[in-house]
Image (cartoon, rainbow, N blue to C red; front, top):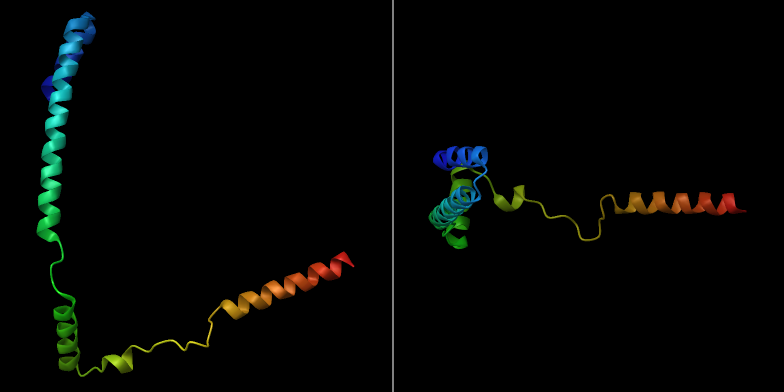
Length: 107
């Protein structure tokens, strides 16, 4: 790449269109080679680091660690009540209050 940049500087100083075209072709070739190499490395890296552990193994390990620590997972991980809406009621009340104020202002 450094050679291409130097070649480009020389071609631009001389303003020789054939030299500029040759340098641009060389740059394009090197850029395509770099793109192919980058794609290959990205593919190799992603396949090497892809998660291939089955979910059952993960769950089993989490359970084992929890047992060793003396923690009950179900007791620690509480599920939210289906009937409770956190924040939704407050937002609805706020909207209703604003609606009432708007109606009062219109009258």
